[in-house]
Image: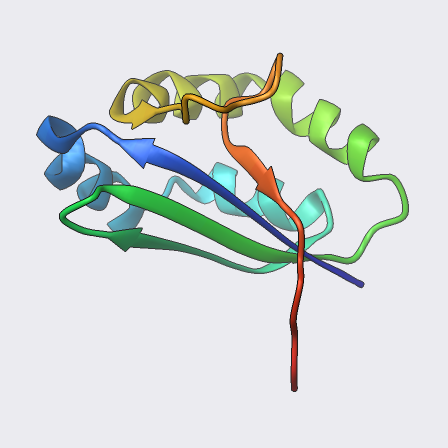
Length: 109
């Protein structure tokens, strides 16, 4: 298992919409997340800065392949079409990056 984290900005005008969407995530998306070996997935919101922080445990053996499968899923593309306009990538994002991946520097159970 590998713990992972990422962050992105949230458009201040879209906070209520983003919260509404994530209060009732589509069942197909929840099933896809699980089938792509992601467990214990949480998204936190820091207001008033409107920064989203996502964290999860990856239980698979090929993260890139699982993420490619997730990205190719038609229902997930629909989900991203409604969620992505709410988000604001960080100015320091890497090429091809939407959510900015983070390095784990500390953990304790």
